[in-house]
Amino acid sequence: MNQEIRIKAKPFYAVLVILAFLIIYSISSNRDCGDEEQIKAALEQSLNREAFHLNQKGPTIYAITPTYARPVQKAELTRLSHVIRLVPNVFWVIVEDAENTSQLVSKLLKKSGLNERSVQLSAKTPTNFKLQGKDPNWSKPRGVEQRNKALEWVRKHLAENGGREKHSVIYFMDDDNTYSTDLFAEISKIERNKVGVWPVGLVGGLMVEKPVLNRDGIVLGFNSEWRPERPFPLDMAGFAISSDLILDNPQAQFSYEVERGYQESEILRHLTIVHEMQPLANKCTEVLVWHTRTEVPKLDAEKVLQKAGKRSDVGLEV
Ligand code: UGA
Ligand code: MN
Image: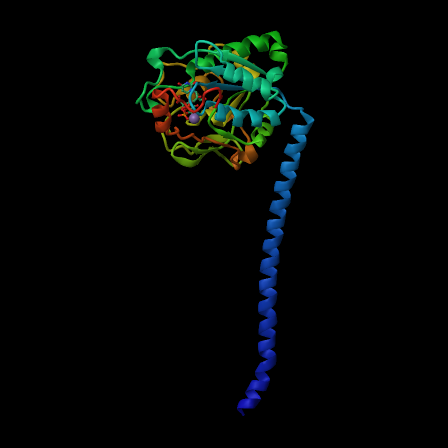
């Protein structure tokens, strides 16, 4: 009797095993298919961006970088110069926070082959607005003097080189952030009379601060947690501006008069409103720039050497 049951059950178990196999196979092949499609789409996109860089088409992007002398300056600028070398439509406007331009920066521009597509300016932050010794870094705005000097240069340069007829883009590119070359392919899509926006990694106390879009892809606002009441609660690295807006609004610039965190809003309020901003980076789903900050190096041993007149960098530029 028992054996009879066992014999009858055999085909039943066999069908069960086949069914289970079919279910597992269909689930896993579906997932593979999704993964494959995703990989294919990502590959296609990176090839498109690569082709874009090679074609050297896009509008000129004026990348405005305030910078100041400190032990990590050359390292930061070297990193930046390598990104810029890879994106031929970037023109680098570098503004030193100093009385005069420096040898360190001019040599770096020359060596990296960027002489032809850069300009080296200087604008010193007035002493009362400059961070002193132990001041926390947020206590005073940074880059105001330098970015305004750059805007003055860009406006004059644009007026002398085609004016409103010629479309280009202005981007504020701080010297310590991390930029993907793909970001510049995105910036190149900014249309006339538009301010482009995209997510920025590691800023405002969040993994990512990003524009929030509605179903039609219109920017409704931002996901910011820090001072979300700001008219434009985003970081300097998260937007770029079409040149005609810069020419049409000569009053648009940075200011010492505004509260902490309001520099971005200060310039943007003259140029656009939130829902007219142009979302980029795949409807703001990709992070292509990170608000990284470099640790201040500990140089205690160096200070001791310097006191003894034996500094480690004699005859060397670090
Ligand atoms: C954040 C934003 O990312 C900045 O764009 C904004 O200017 C700043 O806050 C602010 O609210 O003022 P954070 O990383 O805190 O930036 O600032 P830094 O990276 O220290 O400075 C921004 C830029 O100004 C850098 O390119 C830096 O080299 C330059 N800077 C800084 C000077 O030219 N002089 C200084 O004394 C300090
Ligand atoms: Mn920074």
